[in-house]
Image (cartoon, rainbow, N blue to C red; front, side):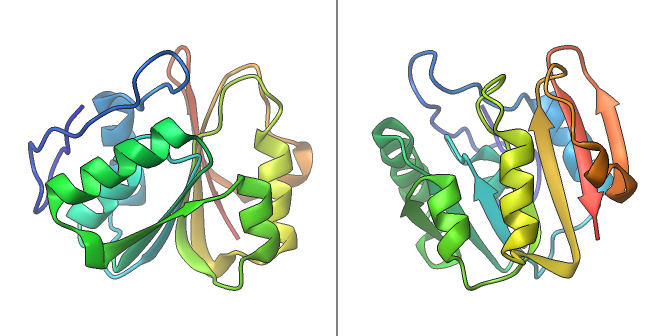
Length: 177
């Protein structure tokens, strides 16, 4: 897996070993970053971070700061290795927490939130609900969700969809307030 563009362009990053994480493909990353167009100077939250590929891509494209959230020991280890490799310790922080616990205690707001939960675990709507209930997304912020086509977004969020497209095994949905 590699960083597509920006200051870390073409840098390969480590991925979480085994079948527990499903990395975002370069193609899907390109789609996401062409839809959001810019993340310069934005505060970013990477939920269910895994290897952190979306957050590291945002840092590479001049995001102000990224908070990575994951609970898996394997993911935390890989996130640390990637931070070391990219030498970006001042641009990000890892939180070893379950996503719902983090969102319930979060006192920050973010301009851009990436959310790539494990597929078919009914986490999409629960997590979106927590994000909005706890006012974690800024008023002009965007929420980018990569999810299974089997997990449809609740109708209450559909009016906020600014982009949605199915890419076979993955759907990319972008919400804005």
